[in-house]
Length: 291
Image (cartoon, rainbow, N blue to C red; front, top):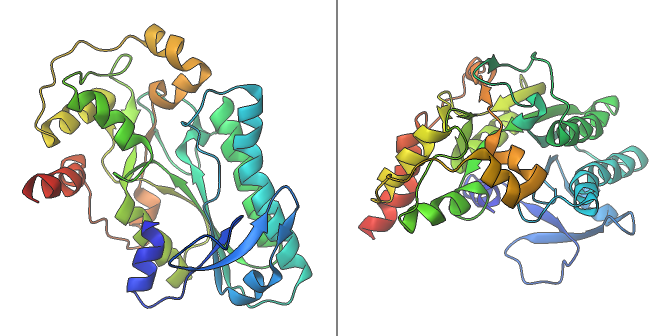
């Protein structure tokens, strides 16, 4: 995990929670198991800060009713378990940092949304609301609590980018749906450095959008991606009905428009390494082409 790598490089000690702590790992690992409602109490007494990023991927499988429950429960139950253990044990935890998602705003068209904007009512908005409510319990324990509403996190190791680049590399790059829907994104390294700043800087408290300052439309994103991997961008757009047929309800992940403001984070003094999509994509693909 990139966050752990950067923390170690900066001199932090890092431990992970895992259902299988005996598995070979480069990090100190404590066992937890949501089904058993169990967490090794040594994990709680070990920590100064807890970063909660656990949650089943929203894009790895079709959204059956069972999968939807897993998407919500993996986030909420894990936070509830941490809350219970923190509430019941002696510890020296100073802060709790949780992920959430910009999908909490629902489809906002070309309207620029901020942390004060109204939230949506589609499935992903409901997931994010439940996720944030479970994380905010930590505030009741007088822990400094920070929630980052993450945009599309750009990384070649997982998430949306490898799935989006695959058709482009096969010469089938095209806008999805109208292509006019906004995509708010953040480079993986900026996301990690933002989390670390929230650990170190006590002014961070409450909810922040974790997005780069310059969102782009889907058409712009796919065109920049094609240029980054030196492939043509020539196909007509993929119509929304075709995406709905293939993805079902999950199509809201790619068809919803989210133009999200980074102003609150910028006002903390945080500096993005990757402000523009072009330089973010080049950091992944120019490197590979030079190697």
